[in-house]
Length: 183
Image 1: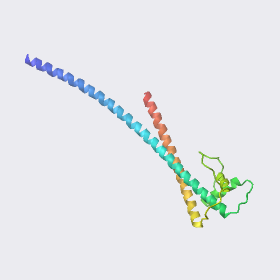
Image 2 (image 1 turned 60 degrees about the vertical axis):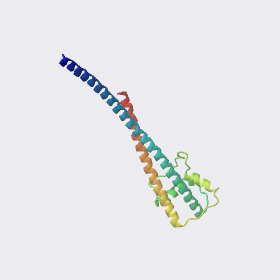
Image 3 (image 1 turned 180 degrees about the vertical axis):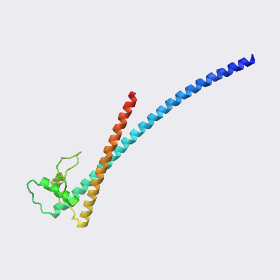
Image 4 (image 1 turned 90 degrees about the vertical axis):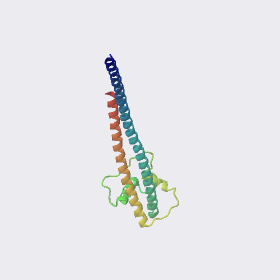
């Protein structure tokens, strides 16, 4: 009799233990799923933050480049006599491209209009008519300014390509997340 009660007690404890193990396994699976979802969300938010930081960096580089272009145009305007020529818009852009690169541009320079609220070189030149003061730069600072503009334009291009790749990654992540939700 005593043996039977001990066996029943052990069987009962075994069933309770199995039931508790089953509950713990279910809780573990739910915790793993929540952790995986949090990791995916964190990766998505990090990519969004990186994209925002890249946009800010690109904007700063564009602002620096715009400022240096303005300085360069002011110096060119002070160095050259101001005689307007018909159709000088395209010529001015080609002259500036030659000045920056030191050679004739390989592709024609086309005016694309202002992008994202930034002024164009033509706008800068028109604004110079109302600009009365400025200091002359010697050839060394002019060369340095041109070098800085070239480096900044290169960095802007690199940042824009990196931003495009981040957007592609972000888009592919969101597509994958949507597919997983439907599965």
